[in-house]
Structures are given as C-alpha cells and as structure tokens.
Length: 446
Ligand code: GLN
Image 1 (spheres, rainbow, N blue to C red):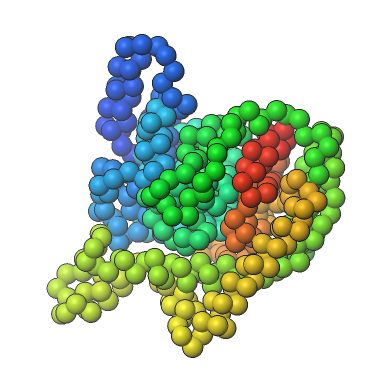
Image 2: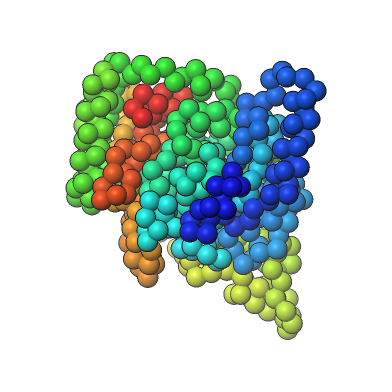
C-alpha cells in the first residue's frame, strides 16, 4: 500500500493522515500471530484499510476535515474500528472528506481537495471522496465511508468503484462524528462486490453503544453472492430516469437493465411519486439535526479554542466563527432557523411528514418487487470549481441518493460503464434489512 501511495498520492491527495508507523506495528503483531500458529485469524487478516476522517481512531488524529478538530486525538476507537482490528485488518490512514461530511465534491475539506483518479480536473464526489479516490487509485482495496445523503454511493459512482450504504441501524454509529443522526450510516467502499460483502460482514451487528443499532441476526453476506438472479422482480422508478438525468447516463442504465434481463430478472417501470420532495425534506432535516449535533463544538469541550476571548459568549462565538467553514455555517444557520419555535411546524414538521410519504412510496413498491434500480447520480463527476459557488445546484445532485437515507433502505452503487472517460454508477436499492439481496444483485451484475 505505502509504495503505491507514494506513487499516486501527490496527484490524488486522498489522505489527510497516513499512519505508517502504527500500521507497521500492527502488521508486525499480526506476523507474530501467524508465526505462533497458522489457524484462522480473522476475516480481514492483514488487509490494509483506509478510514474516513469522521470515524474516530484512538491515537490517530480525527479531524472531520475541519479546522475545528485539526488537533483532535480521540481516546477511543469507533465500534467499526474496533471490529476491523478484531478481524485483523491494518489501518493505513485517514481519508479526506467534505468538512463534517457536508458536501458532494470534497471541495469543502478545510485542508485540500481530493482529485478524481480518472481525470484529475474532476471532483471525486463526496463527502467520502477521499475514500473513493483511494480505492479507485489502488492505494487501498478497502475503505470505510459514511452516507447521510449519498456520501458513499455518489463518490463510488464518480470514481468507478463499489460503495454501499447498509440499512440504517445495521452498522453501529458509535464513534462516527454525528452529522444527522437519523440518516448517518457507515459502509464499505471497495473495488468489487465480494470485497464489500467481506467488509460489511466484519462491521455489521448490534452494538449497545448505539441506541439506534438494530437487534438482528447478521446473515452470511458472502453466501448471498450466488450469481443467480433468475425470476427476481426489479422495479425502475420513472422519476429516476426523468428529465434531470444526463441522457448518456440514462443510456448506460438502459444497458444495465438489459444485462439484468439477460440474467433472468423481470424489469418493470414503477413510480415513487414523492421523489421530487426528497431534496427539500433532506436539507431541512439534515441541517436541523446538524445544528443540534454541532452545538457540542463550543470551544470548551473539543478541538479548537479561540485566543483571548472577552467572555464565555465571545469564546463560543470566536471559536465557531474561526473553526467552521462556510458550508458548515450555512447548514447550522438553516437548521437553527428550521427548528426555531415559530417555524418548526412549517418546516421541520412538514419535512418529517414528507419523509414518511417517501418511506411509504418504497414500502408500496417493495410489496411487489425484490429490488429497485436507477442511476446513482444524475451526471458523471463534474469539474473542480464548477459548482462551488452554487450550493443549490450542488444540493440537487443528491436527488437520487437521498430518498433511501430518508427511508432507511440499503443501497449500493456499482460501476456501470463510462461516459466521456468518466464512470457511471448503477444504484441498487433493497428492502429494509435485505442487504444480502442488494449484494446478490450487484454481484450478479458486475
Ligand atoms: N451531499 C449531501 C450533503 O451535502 C450528502 C452528504 C453525506 O451523505 N454525508 O448533505
């Protein structure tokens, strides 16, 4: 990994921190285990992995790509990190992202952008852009990301790799720095579906440290990769193939539909009528939760503390003004406004009702179908700088990924051809807790 990283990292810039010393020490310990006896040492034994920088790692700085946490050294591991260590994997370093996972291009990182390995003038997507770029560039084969509104699937699509958002509650959020707690989910970014199944197997499962963690038995995800999808009923929502979608991206998806049909699946058009309200509902709900979650960054408890404050209020004010970037401030203001007493019913409550309607849309389709498919994003990766000045166009990119964060369903993005030298992603959405089916269809397709 480190040889390849030295080769490509100056151009791709996927990492915020490399922990070569720690990784070598961990690898040496694994070697000792191997010498002792040769029995099974864990699912990911010896495999190098990169971790998005909003997942806390004991002894490795965890910044969320924010100046606020530039020097934050966690004193514990997130549950997923603990599980990865138990499975024998080796943490290589921490990956770049949009500040506090707010964004879709990595341009909101307070430190530096990451570049798309397919074309360095284009964004890698976001917010898990560092994770996707590192896997695409061959710096690591496994990475963890987080997905609140598409942040695993969209960068995976833009970088031509596999990225999965598991069912909400399947993977513990303990130690994931919260953006919007009712939407956040950790998941794998990998080269192929089999690797994703291995990684999900290692990190899924109930955790008493996360009150929203699902108490369910974890199936054998690798056993789901049968290659057989004969007779499966696949729904294609007409809203996912509408006007806003690039015609060449649509063509790639039409080709994917023919592949699935040739494998014996039955594909039919359906409607998810409330799709058009998803972006508005998401940005209200996610920002509301963010405004509350980010209140903990007060200049006293974590990270940054402004110099020479006049009083306590001034300390809060200065620390937050200096520590947060413009997108984070925009979300906090939007969320605080939406939650304020005079506006709560008009905005937050309304958005919650829309969320329920979107979930009901999915429930109705899944009463008759096994799987839903469509594009992961309306276009391929856009140029760096192209959308930075227009938050609204940036938000509208998320139309296809946001619905399942609102509903909780699992979804994966798998590579599905190219347009003008840039990858397209096929999104495969499953029933709640049927993550195995999502992996099965993705594996048969790839
Ligand atoms: N692009 C979306 C946003 O900016 C999604 C982010 C995410 O999933 N973390 O909120």
